[in-house]
Image 1 (cartoon, rainbow, N blue to C red):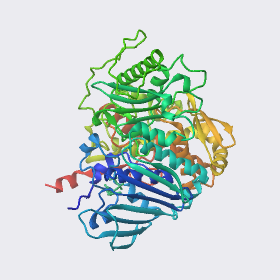
Image 2: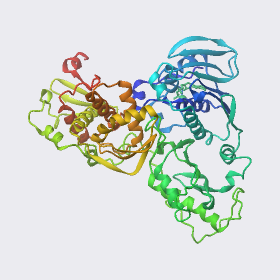
Image 3: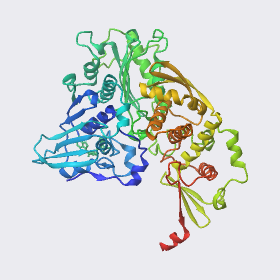
Image 4: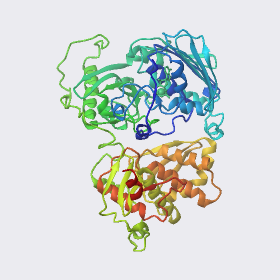
Length: 598
Ligand code: ADP
Ligand code: MG
């Protein structure tokens, strides 16, 4: 039976998609995740020139039928979800059905694949999305996919790749994130004909040892103690370093439901558990695996991001901190116990912290796109205002000026208004129905704001508590230096740290809840890709890139005041029908067209 089907556009659009393949490491991640989703027990990775010339992944998973082999490269082709509802209960790593389509658009791909029930397999070759060959072939069960000359047709992308050493490090980082959660799958990683990693199937601890241990030195994992806590809300297992073994260089890994994640807030919980136990600037190493109901997390904030939003972060923070403390407490009082042996001894420890809130239940109606979305954690309309913090007085004045061109005198304050599909705002107007694309509308509003701020050098800043480091290659460095005055005008405060990095001290105040590094990277990339000759064009590119990144995403549920506010601001723009790059923001369905339907 063929198992792949096309995802309807509506579902695809609910997915906060982004650019999937930015570098060889993102390509590797997608390919290996596909192998794991296909149930492989053995995965081989073969790389040449840090992935620039070759990235090959061979698995012994379920393989694909002839038809599926072809469909797999179509955008939004996936065998993993069918309806938007499925997004909230993901159990596979991939789900967007866009990885292979993205990869084959920017590389030369050759794949052979066979299912156990088929006698012959399929060979398919695609160059920059064009199928150049498809034929039956004989091959082992599983899938062997070879990605050659990544970005051969996107010179800009190729140019942005870092040195082989850096790209190889990125590949390995991505690889670690995966292999540490799949200890039962065996992996090899070969670079330029040299076996860098040979990881047999085993336990989590054996896997950590195989990745980070050095056979000539002490057993790496003996420096750790076990963490093990089960509550209704979350199960937390893993290993945390004994305080005496902590160093300045550390390995810090969180995983949730089989996925690597970054989580600065939970990191704080672990650090707090160690407080007073570590020498200054030493950091705890840890490998912590969370298991929660899939409905209780939102993995879909951004396809390439590793941040994950939990429904109950505060409760989990408490549980995590208490479990780490408990593990360390046990260790401090009874250092000779063998924690590897399953032990039922529960020593009553005077210093032991009670595990907080074990009876919290998961809210099954939690929907990350609706309420506690990642973008605006507070759902009160008041928070909406924070979007516009830092709007300069001049802009407010423009809005109140009586001669603003409000089209057709739409009574935005009172006309029926509603949201459709998490993507469009419908507004009843005099002769029909106005359909407004919410993300584009907000992008246009922010674009105008940012542009004005740039011209008047008056962007409001918000200082970052912890400056972020922006790594740059020499091209990016040169471009950034040229853009500095404008970036400053819009609200960034940047200071050179080293010959290849800048510290980000402050960001524009409209950037709520965003990490600054990807936004600046996006700006640099867009300015380069879209090109700019004059300062005016430069500014337009910066304003647009920043607006795109800061605008409300598709899928964000808006309440009525938010919608009216957005539409009012949109209508106040001199050009509100199209974005600065020509895409439609509004469309009108006339009464006549509506009547014709009946
Ligand atoms: P996604 O993983 O999001 O579904 P991809 O573009 O990564 O999208 O893959 C598209 C489809 O191709 C998958 O849903 C799966 O059915 C099939 N596929 C991709 N890689 C493999 C593989 N290694 N083995 C078997 N099937 C695969
Ligand atoms: Mg995939």
